[in-house]
Image (cartoon, rainbow, N blue to C red; front, top):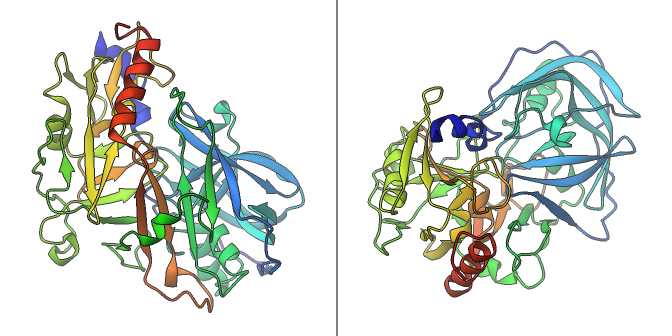
Length: 431
């Protein structure tokens, strides 16, 4: 029974990342990609939340506004709808994500986002094929019409690589954030996120993304440790926002460290003496963690059951909806508690009720590159800053090595009270 129901929601555990190069056709026309250097009045945008599954922002391209998924695990802007005021090219591009792919031609069009204006932004228009890249299949069926890649550097951008390769042009194919940072060469090249939690009356209904400025009230993040990108091969198209956990840096539900050895094939100096390597990716609805870690977290919960999914390499933990599971990550000397509402979720999304089947949000996944992918459950418990530093193209004065900063936002007592309130209101806990 559980297996048949969970097969329908297996795609939740797959995200939108892991770029792979694909075949390309030559581009015959040059276009200017220089950005409008007028400073924006505000570099903050509202981030909407769809049931803790996807997060999206509004972006204006060619005079039209598109509801756009934000993905820190990829590098390009793709639009899945008609676009006005475009300059088409003869270049065909394809991108493969962790699940699904998109294919289409590269275009240029004016873009406005977060107060910045780019007169000729390169993007892929997927009029040819969209293969279920979002957590519930084709994003157009969910009302999303675009995807914005926010990964580090430019080598994760197939559009940039294509234009640079066939035109020897390293300007007109730049990703959105590269063009934005190019407008002010004296500013710091970072973005930050504060994502909300659905079905929690104590959480804001919308989140916030900023560019080169901090969210008011969260300035303490500037005092946190600058976490270097553990794996920083700038020639690798699979470069991600990643760092190492502290030694014994995962505290389990019993309050003790969970001892897990790194399985990465990265060189030993990169892993930091056996510490786990984690990726921060908003394109994953659930965390992707080693099977041993998921077992250590969930197997001790009364009534928990591991359900193998024969059609996938992933297994899922079915968890009673009234189970309060607490896990803390220790990164850069800072304890980041994951809210118990983010550790156990209704299968298929949506609010928990007295008929729900719930599953653990740490999915069994093995990887030979990174030990784990910290998806949106982590982002709901920390204010996250990504500094691109010297991974930007141009002559920016921000020539620091790229880094990540984190600021915990979840209080243990408040989280417990939130969980009890939410599950009591849902009818799965006695009042």
